[in-house]
Every structure is written in C-alpha cells, then in structure tokens.
Amino acid sequence: MTQTSCTNDWFGRGSSDSSSKNAATAENAAAGKVKTSTGKSDDDNSGSAANAGSASTDSDKESVSASATSQSSALLAFLRENSPSKTIKKKNGVDYVTNTDSPLILVNKKRELASTYVPHDLVKAKVAFSFSGDSPKQQMRKVAAEALEKLFAGAEKDGIELKAVSGYRSYVSQHAVFNNYVKKNGEQEANTFSAHPGQSEHQTGLAMDVSSASAGYDLTTDFGDTKEGKWLKEHAADYGFIIRYELGKEEETGYMYEPWHIRYVGVFIAQDIKKRGDTLEAYLAQF
Ligand SMILES: [Zn+2]
Image (cartoon, rainbow, N blue to C red; front, side, top):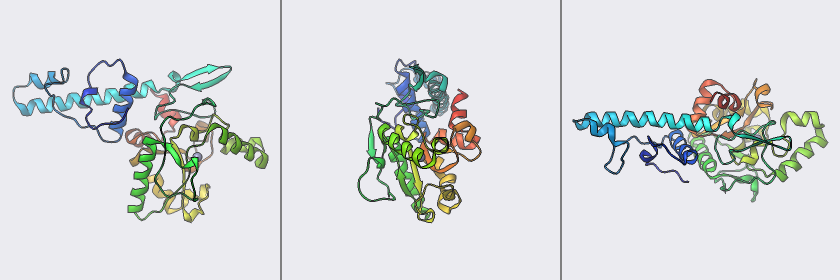
C-alpha cells in the first residue's frame, strides 16, 4: 500500500483490513500527511458530524475534531497491533517476530527474523555513502530510504555533511560479519556490539549506520561527540528516525551505545520516543 494524502476514508470505520490501513494511517500521521477535511457526500460515516451542524463553520469544526479523534485512535490501534507480546511466535525454541512488514518491527537478541526473510520493497537510498561502488548495504525499505534522503538533505541545509555507511544486511552477510567479529574479539565481546544472524536490525531494511569525515567514517562512539553526530541526535526524529541504541540503555536494548545507528519508525512515533527518552523496546511494550 502506498501513502496518500487523502486519508479521510480510513477514519471512523470498522475496517476488516485494519493492519495495513492502520499502518498507512499511522504512517501518514507520522509523516504529517494527514489532512483533516470536512465530510464529503461520498463519505458515508464521517458525514454524521458534518450533517448534524446547521452552520457550515460549525460542521467544519466538528468534522475536523472527529477526524482528529479517529486519527489518534487509529494510531493507538496500530501501536497495539505492534505490541511485542502480540508479534512473536515460538518455533523450535526460537522466538520469531511476526510483524515483519511493519515499520514498528522489533528485532533484538530475543526476537529474530527467519533466515529466509528479505524485505519486499528494498531500494537504494539516494544519499552519499562512505564508500564507492554498488553494494546491497546501500539499500533500505522504500519508506525508510525516502526518509533518509530527506534527513540527509536537511543536514546539508544546516551545513552538516553525513555519509551513510551500512543499511540493509541479509541474514547471510550478517552471519559473515558476526563470525568475523567472533574471530577477532571473541564471542562474548562480539555479542555486545554485533548481532547474531537473524537478530540484526539491519536485516529489517529500516536501519542505517551513519558517520562523518570528522569521525573518519568510522562507527565509533566518537561520532556522537562530533557536530554531525550531535546534529543527528537532535534532528533524526524529525525525519522519522530514532537513535536505536542509546547511552545507558544497554540493559534494555542488549547493545552498547551506537550513536551512528538510526532506525526508521515514522515521524510521530520517533518524536514521541525521543520526548520520552524510551528505547524502542520500552516504548512498544506500553501498548
Ligand atoms: Zn547498525
């Protein structure tokens, strides 16, 4: 489903296809695309408030308010559908996530993706990369790639030069990455900063590692102290991204501080998470 700016139709109706509609609604809300509008004659349900009013100005107000209420209830329904407790299925002793196509998918050391999972809408993000040539790691899911392009453009406007380092990673390449770290650092240490195959957020296509010339395009905590890293922390949410592995949240996320790793969740939810100072784990568990 693609996003449209006309979302009136999605509000106030008991939908049988609630998952994708709520996702689209929440995404539109997140992207600030939801436009409240007065009930039109072809919109049977939303017209009730509008029709009840005698003066057009009153009916406009009522319809707008009804639409806003429906918007927040759609968002709440979307969050509840993506609750960690409702999006997990055990198979052969492993907990697999079930909402694989959702922008709110939660993947971590306790919640895995199948080895066969590949996002269906991977595209190459049109941003500057820290390396030349084509690579699968330039890809993200479409919605995330487009948001990343806006983020990079916003950074450039502010005189900040970011470069993307690594986005989508398949199960197979994560396997290779993790094994390399195990050889170099030992398994215990590798576990603190690298993911077992199936447990990497990079396999979702919603994450990107970002760095800057000032950090030598490295993925190190030093990036967080650069002006580019600070800009990213301050502005990522405005484009729908969160700093996924925050300082002091290692117990909740299972990973050390990674100021370079951003994860797409949508603007509204990213801003809400930032405001609350929650991890994605804690945020989603509330619903
Ligand atoms: Zn990363």
